[in-house]
Structures are given as C-alpha cells and as structure tokens.
Image (cartoon, rainbow, N blue to C red; front, side, top):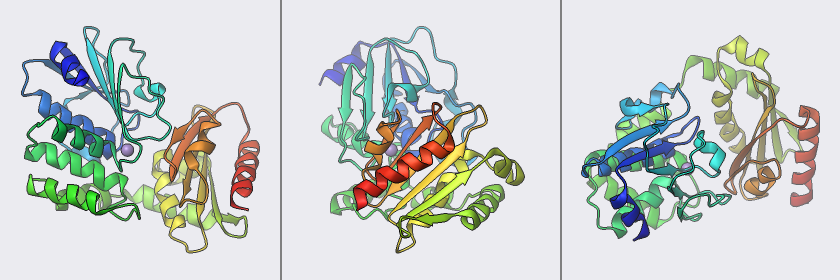
Length: 311
Ligand SMILES: [Mn+2]
C-alpha cells in the first residue's frame, strides 16, 4: 500500500539494476518498466555498468538502459541489490528496495524483501499479484528470465510446486521458454569456455575434496580474452562433483583487490561468510570484494571458516 502511494506521488521514477547485472535484476526492473509505462510518469532504466552482456538483450527494454542517473528523479526502485553499494549511485531520495538476498541491508524507505523467494522477479511477481496488476507477455518474459537464471534453469533443489506454478502461469501469460534458455544457456562465448577449461585444469580440491578452489589472475584472463565475470560459471561445474559441497573462487581484479565468490550446497552459510568481508548474498551463493588482505590471507581464512563449519 505504501509502495503504491509512493509510486502515485512520484513524477520521475528511476528503476535500478545492480552493477554487473544478471537476468534477475534486469528482468525485475524490466517488468516494472512495462508496468510503469501504463502511468503518465517519466521513467529511467538505470544501471551503472556500461557494458551489459549481449546475451541478455532478449530481456525487454534493454535498449532503454542508461548509465546516467537523472538529477530530477523523485523516486528510485532497486531490484536485486542486497547492499546500497550495489546500486552504484549515491542517491538519497525516497527508495523502494525489491530483493530476495538474506543479507539485504534494508536500506530502502520501503523494503519489499522476501529471503525465501527464489528470485527478485519472484518478489515482484507476488507484488503484482497482490496489487492486482495485469501481467502482459513482455512482463511475463522478463519475470520468467529472472526466475530461470536464479534457479539455475529450475535445477535448484528448493524449486517447489509454488515455483513451478509461477513458471506455469508466466508461460500462460506469454513468457518464451525457448528464448530464455537460448539467451541464458546457449550463448557462451568461446573465450569463457576456454577460460573454464583452463580453470578446471588448475582447480584444487581441499578439505578432503569437499571444497573446490579456483584462483584466477589477470594473466589467465588476458590469455583467454575472458573477464572475471565469466569465471563464476565454473563454480557450478565444480559443485556438480559428488564429493564437492563448497566452491570458492578468488580472482585478482584489474584495478586491485580480490573478487571472492563462494558456493555451497548447504554445508556452510555462504552469505554469512561473505558478510565478514563486507559482501553478501544467499546461503548457497555469495560474494565480496576484498582490498585489505592478500590472496593468501583470504584463501587461508575462508578455508579455515569452512573447515570449522563442516567438521
Ligand atoms: Mn537474484
């Protein structure tokens, strides 16, 4: 109700997808963009990252994204941003925060957060239903893309009947399963595949094989032409090993510091470990950017934290 009032009162609304956006953040913002087009308001679709992966261009309104934050905005809505820093802009006006991260900082004026939801598009979908908002084909496709991405193409063991019910309903409303599968899973670049090959070769198994460890430097990225963002997919490959229940990626960033990604199948709470480093996420996947420790230090500390939890 408060959210509806805030929307009604605003004249220029900015929809914010997080930095290095994924299909969930973009899909949720995109569905909201379609919805707000029904009002007479000015809308800006904002994302701080200038180069969004081309494979996400199947999500509606990607051509509308701008990396310039409008000065006259009187309401912002963030999607899938667990922390204020993820917005990539220092905005102090009224803010609606739609999210499903366990570690969400509740930085919004209004927070619509459901940590049990499988995706932010799931949270937005439920909100549309509760407000009796009609979901058209474009909105359905955007919401479905986010759900598919965050459930790893419905492979997440927490996919319940409720999730398949939502998927069913979105398909009825016009979501295009084939387009989402192609956009999300059949659009790998050769560079990222070569990178994954090299990473798997270098993978080490620690803690009796329960933890798969990857370390990536700029030299490896340079040799394959891939980016740090391309590295995360290999974590899911490692998690597919029967013996592995945790996967850790440490990547040396171009501008300095270390990018950390952690996956867990329930053995540890990934979000909780990453929060110790100023990061966050979900129980099963989380990340952080660390600049006050060496790679050796972070690796040893995290292995120790995992050891404590799984032993
Ligand atoms: Mn998400």
